[in-house]
Image 1 (cartoon, rainbow, N blue to C red):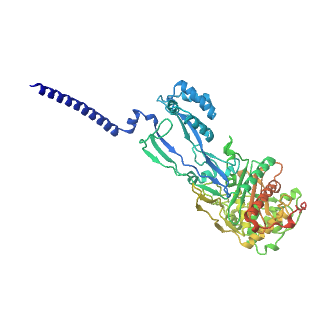
Image 2 (image 1 turned 90 degrees about the horizontal axis):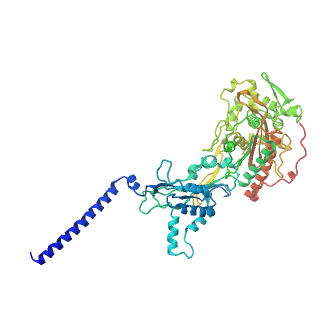
Image 3 (image 1 turned 180 degrees about the vertical axis):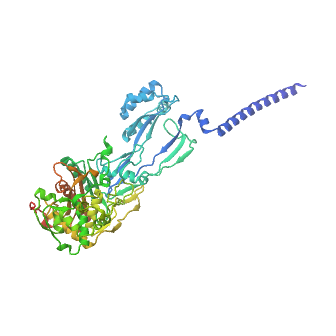
Length: 618
């Protein structure tokens, strides 16, 4: 073989060897890629970045709760969680990071340093994620981000070192519910859980609307929680919650909150509540309970104070029930206006004797009384006499017409329907029949008491209770509005007006005259001072439930106000305990009425600008 042929043969051999080397490498790479694509996700990520593969919840921003004038009652504010990879820093770097964080966000340095030492999980596996601080305010988070970001006159080497150092830390958004007005209608507004779900009140009742729909992201993330490009496997955008404009009037609500707190402090009841409604629309403009609390600083006895007893607490109403008996009497006793009875403070009912508390106190004197005088003086005996002029089923039938035994239409709330005896009234004893006529043997809630007053104020028509006016999207655009709805007619127009005149006498002449006064406007109402029932054992000695329900102005009623106090001390009279509370709330309601209706609002009567003289005894 010639030299030329030898050289050619050698070159060919070299080329073939290089080809086979590259071909082998190509086959190995291809096999590796095929293996990575066909193996399970868990196996693939376990080799390298398993610690950083996370399915993250993308929380929807919760909608706002607004008062009727747009005042924010519940909002979502931005807070942040500071997290780190405890394996990303050396011991010296951890000390440096903790020092910066303590100075910047004010977190506990010792606690953060201990967290950074948790390089293994309790099960022994490597730990790549710890929370160093939670609920960090936007201002503090911004200061930290500024330190982590580009610095003035920073060299390329400094920038590289800074980015490498801080890539171990993440600043993660964690929205939190905030209540700007603090101790404002807390039992009505309710609150959310730590995970952001509505737990009580409107927050729970309207959870689906307020909460929106959370999103989800599943991907490999770096130490700062950022998705690695190309590694996102699941991505679902969150849908923000919608905001709700309620019927609550912030001025009237604040007046009710402050008034009930003063009542609770003075008379020391277990609790006291107030409900304010517009009788012609059913709009609830205030719901207050004392003692209350700041929703931003929940007390240890949260379970005790958070209950909205205005909706859920059922009790025997006592004398405020006489509104129902009077309504039934007007519509079912022919010539009721000509009927009168000699009332001396007691009367037999089978084997029992019923009494009028006012006679014991010396507030009224014996005499002939018709239905109107019986209401004015809150006479149990008078109600019993009129009840006997009707079939036994009549007053229970009217109780059902007034909504007792039926839950008010406010879905999502813990609401009591009240209670009516299930037995046939024909089987009742004389004592049970008598007691039912003046407010014992049934149970109602403060909300139902307000609705009873609203029926009289609204010429006999019951409106459905209304708490929400509008629903708005995240841009503030109205997407749904709610209008007042008639529930049903309870009594005739003339009946309501006759009972209204009786209730005016309660305030102008009777049991409430000393305590109810709104300059320029005629108010009407009914007092209640009921012995507290203790189940089958009867009634608790010395324990009462005091109440008052009324409305104003008399001719064109705009607001109904019901107030109730459970076991007050110092006095148990509904007029004395709850009457002043009604007056304080009503005065704010008048201001709201004039602001809302302007020149069309009922004008004050100049003859009613001065408080009347002390009440005379009857």
